[in-house]
Image 1 (cartoon, one colour):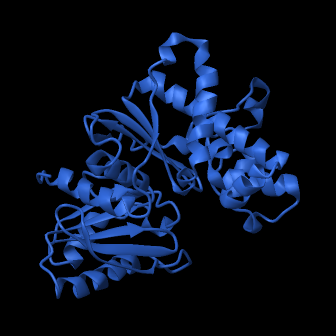
Image 2 (spheres, one colour; image 1 turned 135 degrees about the vertical axis):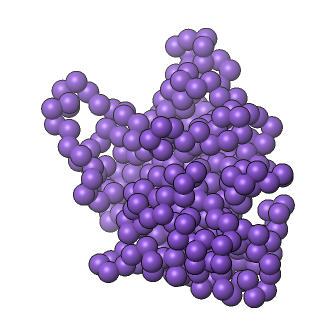
Image 3 (cartoon, one colour; image 1 turned 120 degrees about the horizontal axis):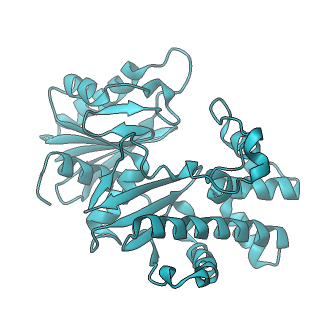
Length: 322
């Protein structure tokens, strides 16, 4: 039996899972808040207390974790930490193994864990090479090579939020860093990165600005509903997003030549999302026959994808047969 965590900015979901990825028990606790005084020790103790409870019920063969940030999977170190900056440079694998009686631990970035769920049991289970894009506040992703996540020299392979798009020659001297800016503020002030064009957070932000609404009052569901009822602003922001994502897909295709590009994230549950992207891919690919074989599909898993992928990552790290 395995203890598997999916760490978010607000909640830590956790599950007891068997070796086939079936969930035996699932629950969640609040994530230690990002505030002065919170540190990696608080985080480790939160997970450690859950371990203490679970190990009373089951013999645990390992701990698998999906979490935000750039993850050094081999050495178990977190960089950045995403919504949890107190984890930056934490040697989390070492700390948790010490806290949890030597139980082996494996870490993976959350978007890359979602991608591994597709590799193990989803819509990339029959291919060796794939690109997977996960849409949310930003754009997470993974490059899959020979059924494993390609991390890159600096742990940045698949960090699609930072792909440069929409940058004109006249903009070069106006560039400013996104560090220190809030998410939506960074989209407004640094509108060149991929997240500023293709993320669902920016979709809602654009619609709110153009309609004079508050960001908190806008959801993807509202935009799709209004678009279906003829709202031209809703239709416009959706088409802009489809166009941006289509360009990203075609660029990934000619850079890496994957067997399939998968689209995931909560918004992918809306059938019109993949339909809209495919429509713009079909329009753009008329440029050249080199794009003819591009294959797009949606991810199979959503709610528990990070848990499933984190477990598969553990099995890969410790070379456990699946």
